[in-house]
Length: 469
Image (cartoon, rainbow, N blue to C red):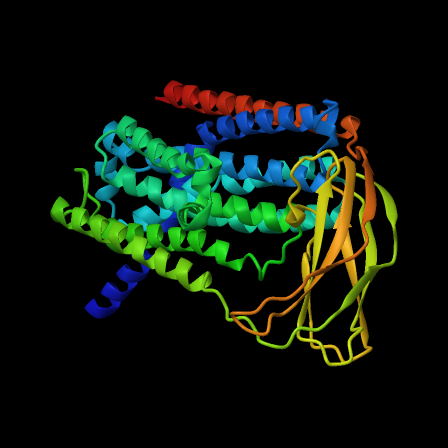
């Protein structure tokens, strides 16, 4: 065999060496019991939460869409926590235990080592998501809600777990001890959570939009809440996906393209730490104008159409409705041009108020709050169908408003309101606690038994090896 063929074969062997690192890391993570312990704690937490939602008189009244969102939010949060802990320990832990040197001496490229460790750190997330599926399905008992929630929860959860794992491994890469890397990773995680604790006024306006839309964790939560609970379309909320995706791409780029080739025994790259400082400073400085520019581009107002003012009328096909929480109420509006000329473009908007004076957000009650109408000819009419999701008990008044487009920037128009629909929503629970309890108890017990069995077999294997020696 020629030297070129030998070198080519060596490159192929090294290119696939990440599988050996992955197998080693998975054995240490799962056979050692660390991942199973974390999953057991997660199953206990999720099981207790599910059982409380199924048995507590107040929590049982939460709409099933909101229950699905809350369970997904908890699942993703714990998945991020597990990946954060494992990723933070991946390199600095080996460095502290003195096992990194032996790994670096193997005929494996530095990047292959990091790839294997990265994939191993992601491994607890799929089982954690699988554990949450039966609990969410039993609590919600609506296949459409469950499938839609699991689809987007799985996609966004995976993106966030990938990004956070990459971030934790970057911290571990530049840390000399396991304690330091875990502490710094947790502090960064808390920094992402901090803006959500700001007062409500601080989360409004341009600054609030920047805090929410470009914080990957908060942007993901807003997207899931609007799409799952408030029936917003994915196209309408697509801009909220940019922050999680950019966060994952940025961390993976820094980890695999910049940091991993310089892996060594000491913290940091094989070059100087100043390079990393400059790279980190550049990334931090570049992130802000990019996000500001994108936010500005997505919030640019559109010019209003101009046309002449025209009288219109609007009517609804019902005066009252009674529903239970979780039900859908449909009604139809009829918009008529009662004038002698063609009307300007029209916008029909739905409004809802609580008769007890409590604040109501129409976005939470209907997937479509407005509908546009092309100019109507004189005497012409058009119908629209509307859907209301009864999410909270109480007495409400629903009314519709049709707004003609003003003729120009210095003119106005007269909105026309319909008669009201008196909506009475009574509480109703669809949760069966008998179906939740076996899962809430059985999953943690099964994981605990698996952990104990693995540890017993490992001790037995070690004892057998010592006896033969």
